[in-house]
Amino acid sequence: MIAATDDTIMVVHGPEAFDCGDVAWLIDRVRPRQVLVAGVMARTAAEESGLPVVCTDERPSIVMRGCGGRSFLVNRGKTPESGRIFGEIVAERLGEGTGLVHVECAGRTVYCWNRGDPTLARGIARTTGFAIEAAASARTREEGVREIQGCLPGEAVFVNGIVIGTATAETVRLSWRNGTIEPESGIAIKPHGIEKLLRSGPPDVTTAWCKSGMVRTAPPKAGDRIGEFGEIRIVDHCGHTVYGQLERGTCGILAIGDDTTAICGHICAHAGIPVFGVVDGDADGIVPAGFAPGSVVVEVADGRDDDVGRELAATLGPHPRSWDAWVEDALRHLAGRVRVVVDRRGGRDAMR
Image (tube, rainbow, N blue to C red):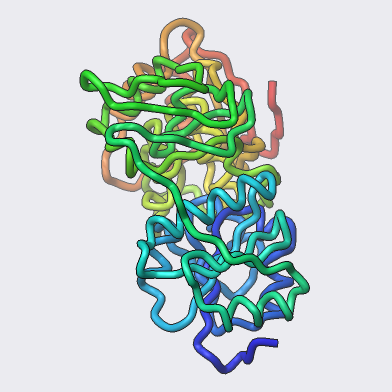
């Protein structure tokens, strides 16, 4: 067993390692000095687990660069191969001069990337019973082109947290040309998704955060609802930014967009923060549904969620108010233009 008194830091990526029990098991077996959590949905699963961890919203490579001392990465990919591909991406981003010890729970393998710390890798393999494998990152970048590997056909494909299409092959190739993202192969593009992505400026496809598939497969754990009075925050088609809005004094979230509403509802369920979601019915099923008490989701009957959501956003300002009263006002304002598809007010638990 690796000594609990050493400087070993465990960096966990993704919610599945928490939901499947890997993190709790590894803490007991490996006994790291500290556990750091990388990523948004991993933070949700970590908070629900109650384990003694420190959460960040940074990428694993950034977290590991700042660790100091010995560190290793824990991940559970959709498949053993997709998990290995993820480790290779992190190893590449760390650079040739920095090795990586990567514990891939899906394949029960400890990868020692680019001459990572062999003593640490052997110690973890011995303690866990996992296989150990030396590996070298050999990914090459083509200028202006990004490959997203390990996809399953039919999965949603994300760039910077926004769904831009559906995978049609195991590898998706994207390029940046003529001021927009263009599909090279392996993807059926969702034009409205590209439009949403470009609103925040042209992304660098070679360094953007890209992934495919569900952001979490486990349903959220419900928490007690917070107080009714406070500020209402707005999350517009960027569900992965919601943690930046969960400040003290927040009484609810106005979420604009189908996937944004799903992510905000899922994350806020455990925190007990209600969501008013505005959708238009083009959800990609990226996360199991879940909403805190007091939440309402409306589907626009004619038009797009963007316009109706921003119309409601214009009624909000940076001052405290009653969430329940605002929801009633919003529903009256939208009467005849939307239908309620989720209603968790006053003890109701309806999804229509």
